[in-house]
Length: 435
Image (cartoon, rainbow, N blue to C red; front, top):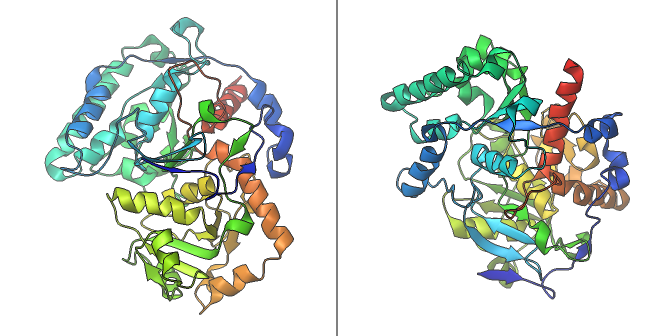
């Protein structure tokens, strides 16, 4: 186990907020957030047949490294790779970007908002791991298995009086919006999906001609991709997290990406980097190589790469987030948790988690696409940002980070004080709207 302590990192004191509005007023968009957050509601979690969730996880754990490298151990958080901080305040894990269904279910099981009495529930949770199932059976041969799972879920829900009565229901989908409407994973094409709100890592920004995608888009709440980094509330003392200050970040621009170009914009940005490496931060520094712009080659299913990625990000000022196979990236949330200012391309119209509540221009930078296409366009644009603006962006990022990820929790009932706080805010907002 690797542990980073004083002498390697400067500890920046953060307010672990007891009152959300204390430091975040300047980041708000919503004017009635306090009212929404103060609304207490209760949810009931259905006890589904194990074939719809537990058996899928067991299959994933048994076949880890055989069919893919999706680690769902430890309540979906994966195995711990290293800890950061004197008191292990941050746990770095091989958390899979598509582990959301498992993580959310396990977090909800421990929530103080949960009720065991369905008659007292305001909203009902459906803990079906349909997206995870589709990941493991993603081809023509296995499509019928996913269809059967959805049919079984349909039969179950249609036997529940609360679903028949039209009570609010919500669930989680582990894959991105458009893939949950595909022929390999047609969950959102089924009628039951029209009667639920879904928590998802991504919503298609421009609905296509696909009617199912358009319909489903209306009921999707975007929440954070699971990051490699998770803070551990029980280990935090003196309201501090081990996040390096700007003075201790000697990499100006950092791009973590695979070497394959998936679109023109991504290719053009990659071409602007003269220095590409798969070395660790320490190995790279020992060779006295330039740190103005560093391209870190990411390899999937490589735990050493995952550890090195986090340590690189904690030494970078800006982390570039060009679109890949889909508009948004898991790396966006890794950079937030590392204190590395995310740089997106285009404008702030892409919907990231909780964009209904927070002004992303206050803790991210957006570079126009035409500038990104020019030689040295990214470097020159970011160099023009004055130091006061840079410091404000970084401080805002530190104040927002705990709400952009899922904390490591123990077995105790917990109050929502991570991403769950704003997940509940969005659900409460919908409940208020309906009343």
